[in-house]
Structures are given as C-alpha cells and as structure tokens.
Image (cartoon, rainbow, N blue to C red; front, side, top):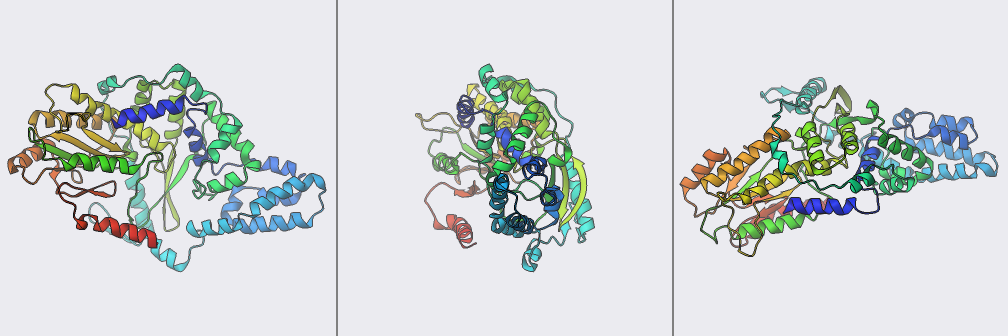
Length: 493
C-alpha cells in the first residue's frame, strides 16, 4: 500500500509542467555551495575597481575571515566613492548583502566558527570507546579510529549478482516523462528550486546558507544556472565540490522527517492494526519491528541503478544519479580538526535533498516483494477485517513494521524475502535491535519457534514507532510519559 502510494505521487509529479526531476537541482545547490559564484562577472559590473577585487577575490577569504566585516568594509568603500549612475546597481547589490550581517553572525556562532567557552565544552569530544573496548582520548587517536570506521562503513562489500527479485518491478516511467526530466532546465526552474531551499541550512564549508543564495540571486543566479545546465549536459563535479566533513558530536536524540508526508498517518494506522492483535484468533498475529543498520550508508550503487532502470528511468537519468552518488569524498572533523580523505563506494548522503527519494525508490523492491506474498496461497497473513485491504508492512523512510501470522510456512517465506533483499541491496537487518511482538496470551512455544526461525528477539508492548508509543488494550498515561518529556524539552529549548 505504501509503495503504490509513493509511486503514484511520483508519477503525478513527473507529469506536471515543472521539470520532473527538479530534486536534482537541490542536489546541485547542496554540493555547489563552494563554487566560484562568478565573481569575475561582478568585477566587470563594478568597472574592474580594485575594491571589488579585494572583496570578491576568492572563496577562501570568506572562510578565513568574518564575512559580515568584509561586507561592512565594501559598503563603506562604495558609499564613499563616486562611481556615477552606472555603479548604482552594484552598490545596491553590496548593500543587499550587507543586510545579512546579523544573520551571518548568528550562523557563525551556530557553526562554531568562533564558539563560546560553554558551547565549545558542550560539543567537545573528549573520548570514544572502540568496538574492542579500548578507550581513546586524544584527537589524533579519535581521528584515526573514526577514519578507519567510516572508510569501512562506506566500502562496498561483495554483492550477490542474482537480481531476479527485480523482475517484479513494474515499468512506471514513460518516455514522455523521461524527456521532461532530462531536458535542460530553464533559469526560472533553477530559481524556483533555489528559493525552495532551507534558508537556515548551509551545505558547504563556506557556510553560505540557502538564504544567502536567495537574497543574492541577482548576483549568483546566472552562474548557478550555468552550473546546473552543465551538469545536465554530462559535466562531472570536481572533488572539492563533493567533499563532505563528517562531524563527530556527543550523541543526541534522533529525529526523522520526510517532507510531504504526515508522520501521524503511519503511527495511527499501526496503532489501529495492533489494537486488534488478539481479536481474530484464526491465526496467531505477529508484529515485527525492523531496525536497519546504517540504512542510508549501505545502499548499493549497482542495485540502485538497476532499480531505476527497472522502473523505466532513462539512461541519461541513471547517469546523472550515478555521477551524484559515486563522486563523494569524506573527511572526519573532530574538535575543529580535519582527519583523512577517503572515497565512498556505496551509500547515499544523509542530508542530501535527493537521498530520501533515492532510498525510497530502492526500498520499493522490499515493499513489492512483501506485497507479492499475498499472491501465494500458502502464505497466511495478519488477521485483518474483511473490509480491509491486505497489509503486511508499513514503511516510513527506513522505519519498517511487518505484520504476519505465526504460521511456520508464512514466517519462512517472509524471512526469505528479507534475506534476498539484504543480499542484493547492501542493507543489513540489525537483529539485536529488531524485535517481534505477540499478545500476552500467546503460548511460550510460539515465541520460541519465532526466535528460532527469524533470529530476532521478542519484545514487549508498548514499543516506540516513529517517536510514538504503540500498544494494545486500554490506554495508560505511563505509555506517554517519555513523549511528554521530549515535547516539554523541545518547547523549553
């Protein structure tokens, strides 16, 4: 049900007048924060005066100095100079940039460019414990271990070449939709996407946020448009544009969000299904909550490209996606120091605007495989009302719940689908964090059989799904105490 809903929405988006694959522009903005921004053109408009060369000479100057001070100096120079009417537009540009002084100062603090003593202490990473139990307490030791860890995490392992599971994927993208997605974007389309960026987010080392590009579009718009169009024509992005710093911070609570989807839909539907877990006793009902190990970081690129082709995406689109995901370089940033430089061979970047879309498309393989179980006469599903559609899973990004019966054959068939998906996609189910749930009146022998067949432990209701408690039976205020505390902390922070 979830997979068809997503693909139908995707088809509607592709058939609209706006360029269908508009999310690619967001990616271009995300990786292109450090580009030259065409300051040569700005210098021409300024008449080649020396002050403009000092102000806009290189991006490194912006990183090394306080940006707001640079703009203040430029504003004084322009206000005091007599350049004639032809310079009025350039003066207006600089004044417009100068209005961002307060915003930039706040961003400097948030990005820890000049952190206060309390903030530095809060974000300082003093020590880590390796998988072997060894405690490392110097930045050099932590950096070396972190580089080793992430290099292995982003390294493609030997992959199963049997992709017969993909044969069930329907071709859903038409030639007309492919043509819309691959045509060169217009300046208006690029501008539209830029103005849809998160104004508070900065994707590059220079700290330029979405708000900067939106406010200064008159200056940088032409160069951004040329960059996007060049990429659509097949140009590779240079390494320094696709380089990313992995920042190690003390662990905090994790929050998930998928734009355009209401998270309460899945929570309410899961609650509705589980509420009647013991109502229909023809078969024992089982709920399985899956935890995927580093789901985004483990996506196989080969698998992803094959899935795109199976859905009907053209080779031009597959090539663009490949150039985006395969040209990623990483360093580890620990307490303000850079460590290492390594290349990934799998995974999609978290925080990249295109990553959720690519991950969901790849995860459709699992969804389609699970839905096809209902076509098997030997498969016995979860007890649902007669008027209800057949549902055996709910997915929200990388959070998945399975619904099935305790029938031995049915459990084996479902686990076979999961193992097949693991082999070809690069995904790995974390069985230590996954759990299955049964009604309290279920016999112990059933739980023992399920542990043996699945390798997954038994959990107890209520459990947390997408941040909310899920349970059956009467409501109890103790179920919601953790949620209330989290909301209260968020309100007071």
